[in-house]
Length: 162
Ligand SMILES: [Cu+2]
Picture 1 (cartoon, protein in one colour):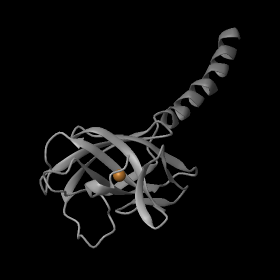
Picture 2: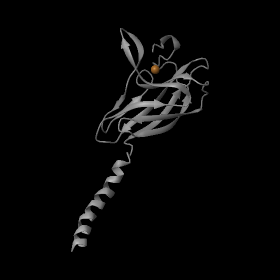
Picture 3: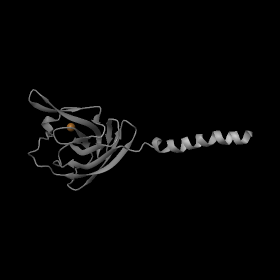
Picture 4: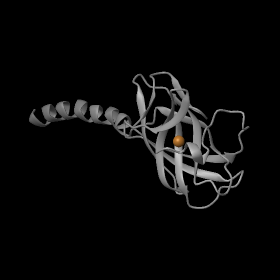
């Protein structure tokens, strides 16, 4: 009788553990697509990485940090219009609304690659590691692309105000 009771108690417990396991593996809810890095002249010390972040979860998520082996420093940036002048500002996080998306693009949110270790060539693949506030990590490779100069990018050295 005693062993039967112990088995009956332990079965639901084991079942609960098995069900909880997938949720604990931090399945990423943010999908990273269309990543690219802006081609800059070989003398440029920095450039920006852009991408589309799509959140399939029920809660808002934040991109909290990024890293790349091609740059000594990687920061999250946005552009702000201050008295008619577009300036870049470092920010702590980039939000992605629940069941929504945030596009990192020239003139807006971007991942700033500062102090490039070597000049980037068009077509190079730049590895990026993106960390989110739920602890999930996404690794992508962003191709280097030239962007038409008509786009509001403002990554010229004169406007690098960190
Ligand atoms: Cu920037």
